[in-house]
Image (cartoon, rainbow over all chains, first blue to last red; front, side, top):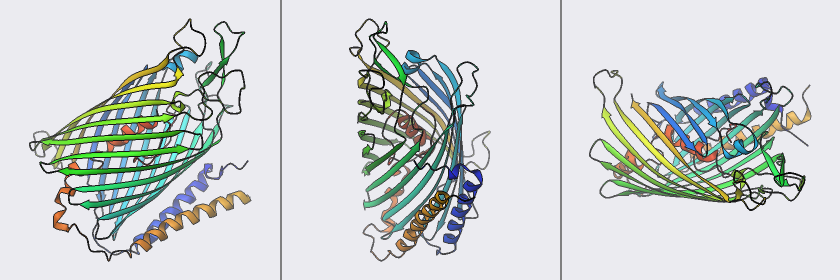
Length: 401
Length: 86
């Protein structure tokens, strides 16, 4: 079975990156100076916190973006997840753990004529998983700058390892790879002076070790005191998914904005999902902006998912990951932004203006065919369906310079 | 020694990237349609409240929160990076 290992070789990865850079450089000298704008210079420092289902994850995210030589914009992001997990999966099949994930990203944008080219790289590292991602994208304005089309390609290389329960370190005998390719196309269209719409199509294909090395499935076992036992999950080694999304934003006459978006998703694992979201943005005076959002997500389970298999090794592929089950999630969110001017006491002179922001989202997860096996004394398969709620909080300051 | 598979993989990537660049160059020619929203009528579209993504540091974090907990992925602006988040 063909497995793409070639770009796990660092030398080959470097040659591929150099080739991409040369292509971009060639494009830079082929264009003409014209309209189109690079993103603004800004810096953001965010504190994020997720709390729900026995899991707490918090940490900082620092994002800085700066233009240079008038036609390049460079951005860098440093992000940390500090994880403390006692989720239902962890409680029922393992023991609570803590870990830290660090992520670095850099990207370079350049504008030539009516086309913006972007190149980016991200590295995410935790003690048992490392992921590298590189992407290239271009977007082009046409039809009097009312239409923007974009194309993007991303390539990911992941290394999956496993913690050794006895030593606490990484198991030297377990090391698997995952390769990922993403292709996307987007279109953005101004309809009227108040109304803009967009559509995106994205295909993602994965190959390699796609499951979680710690997760198990359960099967009916009459020899067990509780009526069921566990075995390792087995996933296919490939997955291809397609997603199509449309969205729109409308400017209301009293200066506010409403938005709506919808995404359709399906993949070769049999998952079918719909995502719908509506939002409202309301400025108040010169300094405040308030946001409200509601998001509805529904998913049908993967073909090889079951909360309880009839026997051991019941089928070729086995999954009991609640993320692959049939479920609904609903999110309600609020946000407040306070804008302050530059020149305040103790503020560096290069700061032109800034904002202080607070966002809070509350998520309801309701699973239909994933059961809460913490509830004892019931026949296997009759436990109540699992559900939980989570709070997501973001506090961040942004400055423009 | 270069394996046959390595050569095939390199050629595929080259072809895909060349296609992306060719598409971009061809599209540069499509600029003869008259805009029905004139440049001086685009003030509302340029208002920060009309941006689909006003604060990228916040929206990319929220995309990560949903991508880690749902089976669906893509087409909503997420960065597409991987992690062991489960």
